[in-house]
Image (cartoon, rainbow, N blue to C red; front, side, top):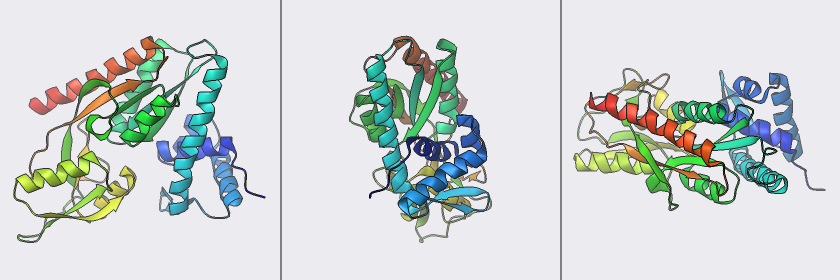
Length: 293
């Protein structure tokens, strides 16, 4: 008999990924940390293989766990979209709002989106989905996400422009690039990735040889590799705060901001999506002002 994946456990797994660990996932889902752990162990027992592993205080997804996470998003998204259709889109019964955002700058963008939604609809349960831009727009079109904020050039779907995401170079504190003519070691998300291409294009235009020495499927892996001193990474930091454990790198070419767009689900409440779009615009406009100052 094939294993059955519990949808409640899948929600917990997604929350561990989206909120960066068991403790934050428990707070987001209003569950105990032990309950989240039990849900993940239930999935591991069903599949007969580990899906997460501890690395000091951090939680890493195994290769099987990363694959399960992608499937979990599809399963939960399809379930929630079906519930919305059955209850009637836009009705009072549809009390859940699903917000999607690209990984780049998500730690600043998601709180702004969440607050904007709750201002308009105080009783709503807000869920978040962090994913690659093309997957987010596909999820919007399938009705799984109410509003997605994504990197414009990374998806073919049309959306509403909301502003530019500042890009800066970061590396481990004290890291120094190798002396010429050795190529600059880069850490990046694996292809396809707009930020990766931006980094390589800017360095090539600056006649700075570079090579990708470490790549990961998700931003968390890029951050870990950069903290380990493997190389420099081009990162989006809208709020101007350095990523934890990293320092800004000088002497590398400036890279123009990555443009972001927002795409609402067909039939989504325009008051909710409109407030969310304006909140992100205000955040990115403030970032542009700070960058120009």
